[in-house]
Image (cartoon, rainbow, N blue to C red; front, side, top):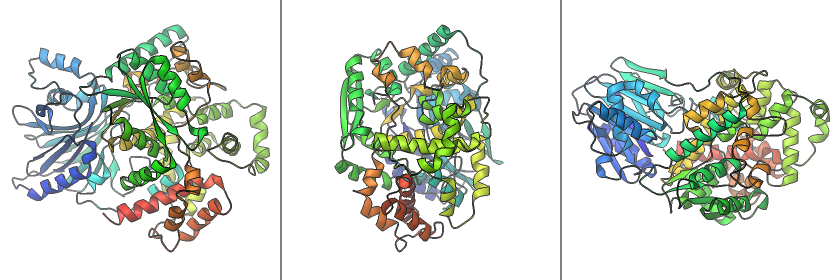
Length: 628
């Protein structure tokens, strides 16, 4: 796990651009948290490559990057891990290739020398890399299948700039013009769906894609698409056997490291299964969970402890109190690349900070919900397509339901919140219903906050994620989640928050063999009117306490509403005061004040997420956009 950055001029020249190397070093310094163990640069006139290293495999200096082959013709900067590197190494050795390190970086380098972009199909892992052929003046910049590792880029007529984080990319000479359509999407979803970013013309390389830069300019090509056709599988015992084997192998391969490895363990189904498998491959497994001290409704500590005792791991509970929360939120806000308001990122940062004191690599359960239908919205969507009496009556009761008080921090308030959203969604088309239940704020309210009309442009962008959703194919809903939510919210959150503390997080559920297998299964193995992640339950029910599978779904959340109404209230109100706002070119201060007043004065809890998103944008705008 590392950070990379670079600059590539399409037209080669003999002139050595010394200023380019200086800018590259500033970009690497801005991302030093991603790889504090070593920094290296390669400057070749019209191409500059840089790397911050977090040492995980082969801790020697010989494995530092940029890495070049013995001829000096090829160079590589690489962020990520290749979990089948030993198999690939053996294959290359049999063809006469000699190695001087035991790193996966050198394996990737030689594989790319041999196969160029065709090497991508052979890789099992997560990555973002840049591979340079100096003689041909050719650069390949690639991103992994599901977007586990980030890659931002900007291309002018003459130059390609790229970096692992926007804060690194911003060090180069690129325009920084706010994209108001991205702002609207951020307010609705709490994140900005790729390939777009908060800046016009700055893009996130799409998962399973690569950039090919040559003397002729830049091309983007897709190298992977995971969404296979669904196969009829009635041989349940065989399906369970295959799934168990694939997930076991995915966990085992992700425990490869020359540094300590641990597991995130919430006590929920996904992380518990991963930790259980990991415990069978080591006698010294460390597991970690957080405790929300001031809100028992969100605290999963008892469940995590029960699982840890069952699997025999050395478990540590990391408390999140209002005191350490206030320290952490500013740290998170101050390190945002672009506006991102998934508040559970604060918890991931706190967890990662503590876990890093003990291990450098942590396994997680990320991806299982999007693959196997683990969210509440999946059950809701399934039920909405198989309507019973409840679904027929609820839309007519909406005026009464709307009066009920909602909250995410109490059991009763959370049920009222879910009931309202469910009733509203039943009146919409399937695609509209999906977007409502995938959003954190009302679409029209978000657009009314803006100074420009964006609905047409925004509709075209978001349609790419929902255009293939079909009522006759519930798997299409899960595929939409994998494209929209998994890549842009969940994986972005985990990578950015863990790498703030130089912690590598590995999710075994996103081994491409596991993903392709699950995506090929009928929906009956995933979700129905009362159950979620059916295959996971049937496969591992005998491996863990039954409480893991029987308890209600609980997200990895923080008591956001409680914080906004108490510890953060003064800061929120001051920042979003019309007299203090500086983003008035994009947000209407009067409309923002209306939302803030509805939340604080009228006690409208349904605006919790929107108030937080408005604050995060204004904070980012003042402290990142205007000051950098």
